[in-house]
Length: 202
Image (cartoon, rainbow, N blue to C red; front, side):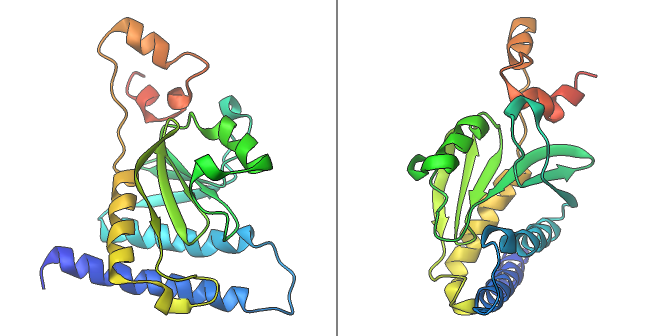
């Protein structure tokens, strides 16, 4: 078995364990809890496992304050001490298609859509967005992780999500080639100045 297949097999196992954990959480019908909040720890562990498979070391921080966004995305992901992207969680069932968000979630997206590298997920569905534009397809698991456990995850699901996460982790901003372009990127309306591009000019 080659390295790529080893990675896929390991991530499939990790993803199925993640689904099983969430099924166990959501099966506690006698306990009242916030559905979205139950995703935090399992998703943090899943992200770390994916990074490890990809030979990356990440640190996950929660409720990251971004002044230019007037809001707090649920998670910030750092590599080598630099913030490279965010994860925004939604309660299972809300999906990851930002064009279908409603109410407060839609208003929040209007604040967050300028983030240059963000994943929206409700645990079952995963979408990668860059400055408001969807990158690739939204990944939808074969079953519902809140009730189907490991059987909710197929090998194709694991492969697709690992590719999406690799794209997310490896994000690099386009370095401006002219002073004017740099000035535009660092303007207050553009949140990329909060990311590692800024550090490359210090």
